[in-house]
Length: 119
Image 1 (cartoon, helix red, strand yellow):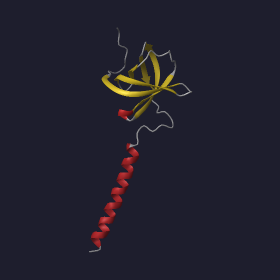
Image 2 (tube, helix red, strand yellow):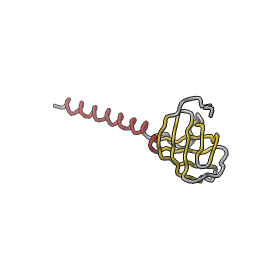
Image 3 (cartoon, helix red, strand yellow):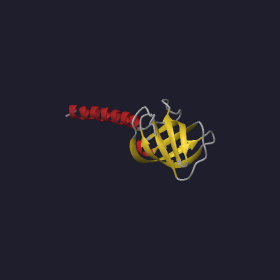
Image 4 (tube, one colour):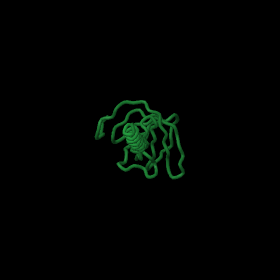
């Protein structure tokens, strides 16, 4: 079989949740391989032919991907990731937590300097 992928995929086993369509129907899945541009996903049951896009959330990576369904066969689906981030969904809260931590660190450093200066 000819491999038409633009980048190599890493073999993984990540639990995920796929959300299909405007009605927000979800289904648990397993990501079997992944790259920057797409993934191969396995569902527990044979899925009906969903066309268009889906939202794939992978908790272990702390990310959500807006993905276009390229192919499906029985309970396997191949998707290509869109470059845009889904609106309204945080990719990760690590950036926010880091900013808060750095702010708290600066406050504590100032307080230590104040206390040492008072001696």
